[in-house]
Amino acid sequence: MIKLLNKLKLILKDKGGSSFPLIIAVTLALIIIFTGISEYFRLMIIAQGVRDAVQDAVISTVNDNYDDVYHGVREGYSGGYQPVADDFQESLNYGDIYGRLDNILGLNQSGGYHIKSTSDNKMEFRIWDLDVVIRNAPIASGDILSSRFKIDSTIMLEVPVSFGGKLLPSMKIRIKTSAGYTPKF
Image (cartoon, rainbow, N blue to C red):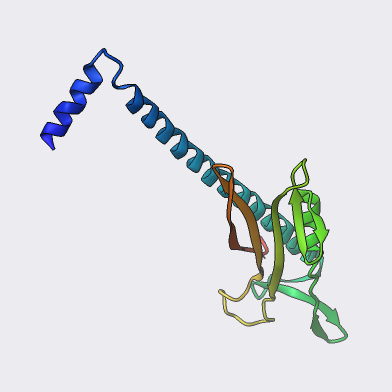
């Protein structure tokens, strides 16, 4: 090993041009590593942007439910209920999360997918399989943990991966978000 390191030092110190192939190899290796890191960051930026957009759409849905949330200030809870006669009836609004996502991200619907395309009509990413679960706080439960109006959502994201000019298998991930409403006063 020491012999190899000494030989490498001699090659690098040699002024005869014998280190030229080594420099080319190191440069190509660095370019390949940089390209891989760049693709990784592109995928993470797209995933983060979609997650933020879904979170924004879910928060808008929570806000749409605000006017139907019963303010149980005395009891210290809140939930999506409307007074009906001498009782309360659950009142939930699922909103148009896909519509909000289409506006925020500039998506077009095609089949069961919502697709973001590049300027040359290639798919940048697509989303589908939105699942929204609204957890309404029960009336007068007394349980602090369940006394919050909450919306959990999941959605599938697919992003094509390319490296070195070759198309690799797409990145498919399930994105989970959550938002809730808790009265301040």
